[in-house]
View 1 (tube, rainbow, N blue to C red):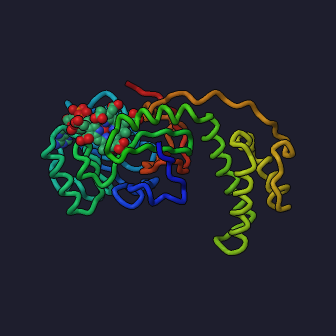
View 2 (cartoon, protein in one colour):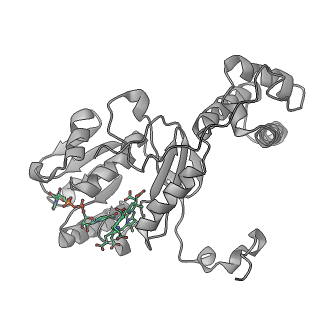
View 3 (cartoon, rainbow, N blue to C red):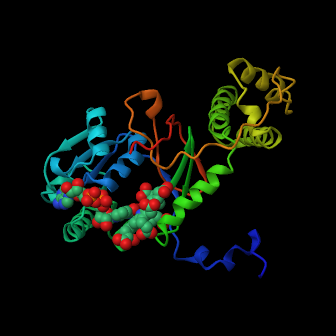
Length: 297
Ligand SMILES: C[C@@]1(CC(=O)O)C2=NC(=C\c3[nH]c(c(CCC(=O)O)c3CC(=O)O)Cc3[nH]c(c(CC(=O)O)c3CCC(=O)O)/C=C3\N/C(=C\2)[C@@H](CCC(=O)O)[C@]3(C)CC(=O)O)/[C@H]1CCC(=O)O
Ligand SMILES: NC(=O)c1ccc[n+]([C@@H]2O[C@H](COP(=O)([O-])OP(=O)(O)OC[C@H]3O[C@@H](n4cnc5c(N)ncnc54)[C@H](O)[C@@H]3O)[C@@H](O)[C@H]2O)c1
């Protein structure tokens, strides 16, 4: 088998110069997402959108709601506006920022996409990949860690299988470590405020050195006073102390994280449900989220 292209040969992969999609972590706070349909796929859309702090509108006759969608509507009445009807026309798109259709009516789905195009609203139609502005993907989430696997529409089942493999390779410390790094960065910015310039460069350099020198597990030990200690002994003195110097200990590695699935159980507990970002990403992106994974059904 030929050697795999190295980083510097990135152009060798034809998908790097066209045919791929832009991978992003889409921020939906205070935006309105319209979900048309209330069956299996619609409930999976709710799994993804509920953590983003978006408002949601679900359009679907009562008779078409599956148990999971029904549960979401019951648990989050202040976040989800439910209408017991089918899609009625262009007026449904007023004040809507994003549309997800998950219906078993191909012609209606196509019509909705057309209306979204006219209104310039991004749309995903679960049954018509060719008309989608973006795709969903298999997801791994651990606190602020978000990993999305996409096959760009080619093999959704394989996305799910790869999710399981990647999940097995994670230590289980990542989400907590990233949360602590977020807290450290916030405190550092208080001591060294502003954007750009020599101070900004020094700040980025120091953060990079700390992240490179410390193990992921080390960060999980940081509490408020250790963060201040790290800034006193590290940032102020232009060095990177060890976790032991700050009173921490090297800790045993956790077993690989458990298989949890892409779709969390609906829960009304705020601390367990804030906030997922609807991410069009592969790799990890940060936002603050605390949600546990377990399939409801
Ligand atoms: C990843 C995941 C995320 C999620 O949905 O949250 C996801 N599909 C998942 C599972 C899955 N979907 C299907 C099967 C049956 C086996 C099979 O058909 O392969 C399985 C397997 C299963 O259920 O295990 C059927 C299917 N899927 C699409 C169509 C329409 C079509 O292709 O025409 C049809 C009906 C085809 C038909 O009628 O024959 C289309 C799309 N499905 C996508 C995402 C987008 C591309 C993702 C990518 O590029 O990787 C895209 C393009 C649009 C979109 O949905 O945004 C989730 C895995 C979650 C996980 O396990 O973690
Ligand atoms: N993208 C994916 O991953 C994926 C996976 C499986 C299936 N699909 C496709 O997605 C579609 C939905 O699949 P499902 O499993 O959720 O089907 P489902 O039968 O469980 O749900 C369909 C829902 O659409 C509702 N509905 C139908 N017409 C409507 C309208 N005009 N307005 C509002 N609601 C309406 C029904 O009441 C029902 O709730 C199907 O076309 C299926 O082929 C996509």
